[in-house]
Length: 320
Length: 248
Ligand SMILES: Cc1cc2nc3c(=O)[nH]c(=O)nc-3n(C[C@H](O)[C@H](O)[C@H](O)COP(=O)(O)OP(=O)(O)OC[C@H]3O[C@@H](n4cnc5c(N)ncnc54)[C@H](O)[C@@H]3O)c2cc1C
Ligand SMILES: Nc1ncnc2c1ncn2[C@@H]1O[C@H](COP(=O)(O)O)[C@@H](O)[C@H]1O
Image (cartoon, rainbow over all chains, first blue to last red; front, side, top):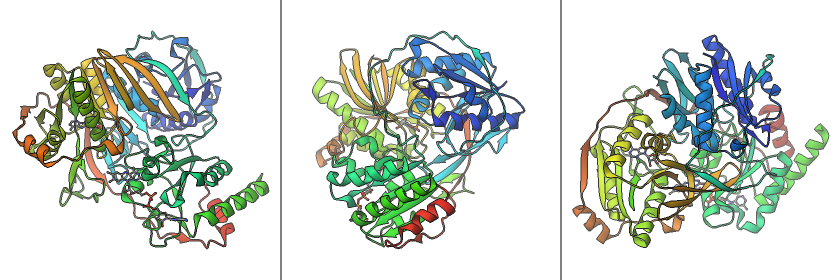
């Protein structure tokens, strides 16, 4: 009956979202009066999960699962859910979790709600709040099936520490062959990704050209942030498509979103509105972004950004 | 190759989102509907297959009669036949089930859907569909080549991309990158005229099975006014972010 949670890792280390979904699963388990079981695939040290409320870890070690494969991973989770007789399965909103969840839903005959931002308001009927209309609204939805899958929106629940300790158990599911073979992975490993980032520094057409992104990258580095951009910036080829955020790009649910030289068009705002604190830096005080932001600086990015970098460096030095 | 493109009929990105009937229904008043942007990239890629590799391209929507102008637009862009499964879309699973029937009945080799719809944002229909028809599945797809029954695709992942090889039958969840923004086609007069004569087949729904129910909608709480900080006083901004917002 325990709540099953898929805790994602990379190169043996848990991602931050793993701790967030574990915290969420713990809250749901408390509501249901049950425990939390995590599934960890090829992770080195699983004890850390206990800190976020996990009681038991099903440790899967299998060379065939070295690269993520939706079909194989969905099958592993299905076997784990059946093993635990789980009625609720919790996953994150990472690209990988969103890839496997619909497959798992069909295999478990489970209803699936994605982009869920709060713990269930009721467990019977099982009622969750999810974003819809690309963050322009929320939808309250019930999941009516016996087994339920909840996809938790990134940074929506946060990390909640619990003083439990997790026991580990080896779990050896069968791994089916998948009709999709990963040939190569091309991934920047030394940069924070938009999906995982707590802070995102984003710039728009106001920056005039790709040669001016040095200061944006520097600001991001000082803050430990990911870099992003508006749609025209990626359409013009100034920045890679993978940095395009907004309604038709990547969604951003960061704790802090800093928009530099971005006007704040409705399609841009829709995609980033789930971020908690928004800062805008723009020469035009009439730019629509000022209506959506918490803090704003009316000024020239070419002066404000370098100055802000210096102030932040000083702040970091003082608070180190 | 027989291609089916799944078309979600969604409010234009500039739409103001409001609700009626005690916040239980989306208020369509004054809203312009369009082909879901992710599906538009997929449809354009399908037209490329049609023109360069001799594929047939059908489009499908699960929805009421109000979605027909959106399907006609897809025909005007160049699809051969449109299918409308005559039932309101209630949840992702119900839509996937209806689409699965269309895919099986039509014997499609390649199904191109979008990564997600911009109204429901489920990111679930294509994966569920793939599983229901036992096809291979690649989502967040930003490049797709098909050679006979083999396919090569590039998928966006968090922080990079991944190249995969797979085979037909295949379902993809597509997005920008599948074709570039500048490749998207606006229907011309000739396309619009031809679309009027192309078949738009209405088929009845088979199952009304759902797994989730929408209870109601809420709008985000309205925000307080922005706090402006002088460009010469950025210490104050750092201070506010640290002490007030507590984000640094
Ligand atoms: C179907 C559709 C989908 C879309 N989806 C998206 C989406 O997902 N994401 C997205 O971002 N957009 C999207 N758009 C585009 C959107 O409508 C806007 O065109 C876009 O967001 C504008 O980008 P921008 O703010 O960078 O550029 P602009 O609108 O050109 O704004 C530039 C801003 O920079 C400011 N500026 C100029 N110089 C400086 C300076 N020196 N210092 C500081 N500020 C300066 C200007 O005052 C201005 O506000 C979509 C549009 C459509 C039609
Ligand atoms: N009612 C529908 N009719 C046809 N295709 C749909 C429908 N709803 C969703 N789809 C397809 O599934 C994709 C993902 O939708 P969703 O799961 O709602 O995010 C869309 O981009 C469409 O390609």
